[in-house]
Picture 1 (cartoon, helix red, strand yellow):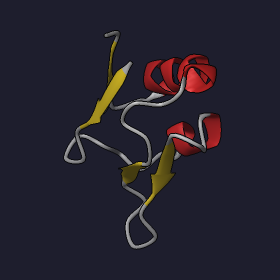
Picture 2 (cartoon, one colour):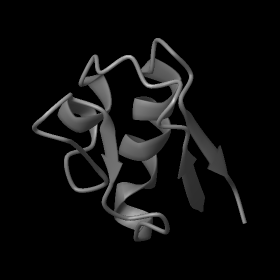
Picture 3 (cartoon, one colour):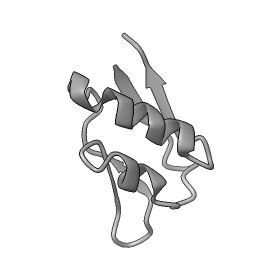
Picture 4 (cartoon, helix red, strand yellow):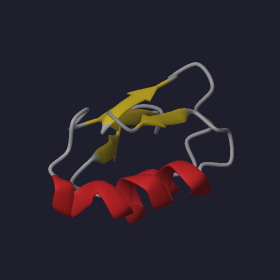
Length: 65
């Protein structure tokens, strides 16, 4: 799995960080997504996929590699 984010599209909802806190965080100053793990371990894949699907601005892309 390879995750990429588009900071410009992020609407700072925080759903990603709440859904997959080991993969995503938010910047303190504006709440924009921070990618903690672009290639998360297999145990985190389901959470990462759910976070990407839940993103209201579609700022997270998950590629299955």
